[in-house]
Length: 115
Image (cartoon, rainbow, N blue to C red):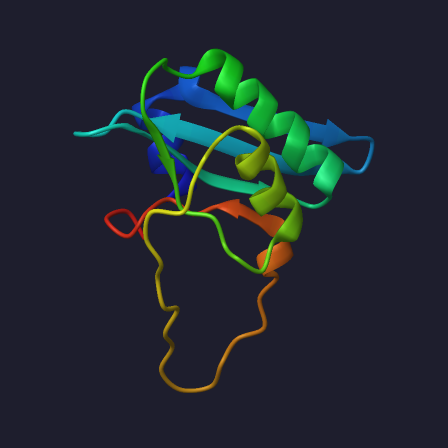
C-alpha cells in the first residue's frame, strides 16, 4: 500500500531518517472534498511533528482531512494546534487473535477507502 501510494504521487511524500534508518514517513493526496493527510507513521513525537510540518508546507491549500488515532496524544495535539477539529470517529475491529500494534506511532491512517 505504501509503495502504491508513493508511486501515485511521489511529490506528496515526506520521510525522516536517523543514523539508524527510517524514523517516519507521511503523505497526502487530493480527495473529492478535501486533501487527505495519511498514512503517516513516526517512531517519535519529534519525527511525527517534523513530518507533518513538512506535509502541511508542501501540501495543498484549502480543506484537509486526516484520520488520527485518539491514542496518539502527540498527533492529536499537533492536529489540534493546526486548527483541525474532530469530524468523525472509527471503530477498529479485528477477527481472531488480536495483533500487537503501536497506535502512538500512527500519526494519520490512509483513510477507510485505502486501508
